[in-house]
Length: 197
Ligand SMILES: N[C@@H](CCC(=O)N[C@@H](CS)C(=O)NCC(=O)O)C(=O)O
Image (cartoon, rainbow, N blue to C red; front, side):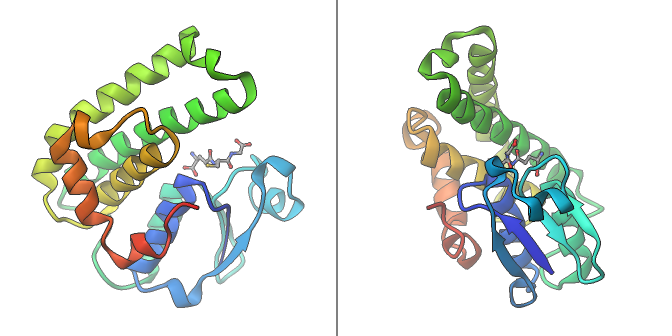
């Protein structure tokens, strides 16, 4: 299998972490691409031009982080990342992706339109979404404990991305319990091996 990715994509990192947790790292080739450069190899797999994108062992192209994670879950071994009997995993993943989307869109808007993008209608809306997600997760992750599933992994990557790109949200001050939870999960080899750079 080949995963097309870049080093700063939180979505791609979720996929890498899922592959490692499912014991698939040795079967996964990483192909580093620049999604912003209309890389032809990437466009052949994902015409939307976004990473992550996966070419499966039987040559199927897959886009979208959670669908790729589902594929890894079906093929590897290890913790079941999509436990059918635990709806909270999917619910948590949805909030994690929501946080990731709001944070990523904030970063991209700043890059292309400057920091005033934060003050426009859409920018302010994104910041409200970030704050609401953090508040919800502060309650919710207490219940998650040390579970390893698509929900906890996605949330932890979203929080890491926030620390990486938007340090004006200091988790340790804003939501100390959530900060401690993130620090614990970030000790896993799957997180250490895929740190943002
Ligand atoms: N919903 C997608 C989001 C993927 C995404 O936005 N990837 C970014 C990098 S973090 C990208 O490739 N952006 C390039 C673009 O939007 O043209 C997923 O879950 O995989």
